[in-house]
Length: 330
Image (tube, rainbow, N blue to C red; front, top):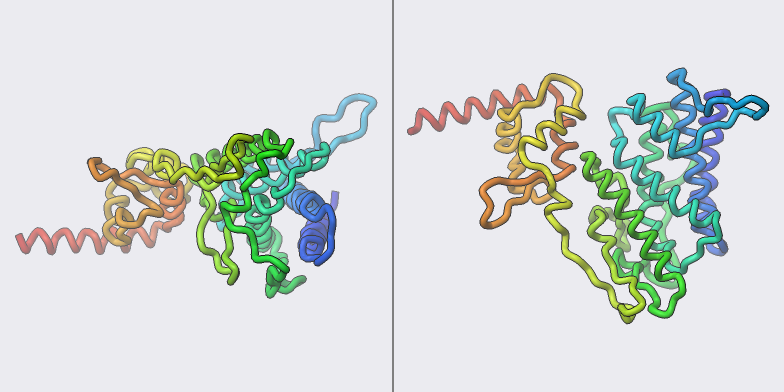
């Protein structure tokens, strides 16, 4: 298998997906786009494995042809071989691809529910950005060289709201399928967040000016899809037990599992918290009003794991100097 051919075909599939999605008149748009996107990733991951001299086939059985692995197995093999580039977030990107793969599998098996295209859109948008970063890091191929990034969502109606698009017709016979699909998405997102994945790499919501305004977490997918919901949306506020699940010791352990370089210590943690005011940033830390200690998010894991030894050395020196100065004042 030619690595170059795999990469070329992967890029062609992604470009075709973008072109199909942006056609003004296109039936079966979401299904075709997602199928092409998943295919693009499968080919790129196979090229990654081949580049590392890893097999992309299942064990051959006598009398049968060789069978190449599917996208889920490709993700698993790339992850186990630690072939994700250091500049991308493997767990989060894996969750994004698996979410689209789940939709593709359902579409192939005659799945059809109105409104899910809007659910899928945030995953598709972020997927294209993830793909560009991955291909640049792994193969030095930039998707932007073959397309314009000045595409606008022009249409007769405004883009769907991040929550409103998940409203379901109470008379729809597909309510159970919709609920099941959303639960699958939430499971994938929770898994990525538990692994310390950067949730901005899973799905991104855009406002009408196409500026990234928030990150979609599994909490945003809690909606009323029951036939008794009367078409209303039941929104659950973010649960800190899901968004910020780690104690300080768990945070440090997960940081060390992800980072390259020396061991990250509790002193490092204290120093960075002082320097960057991490405890005051709800993106990274949360503390109950009656609680004694902060709890930490998966994004805190990613942020701390991304600090280099040199950066930590500078922060530690500044923190130590600040502590000494404070001690002298006393």
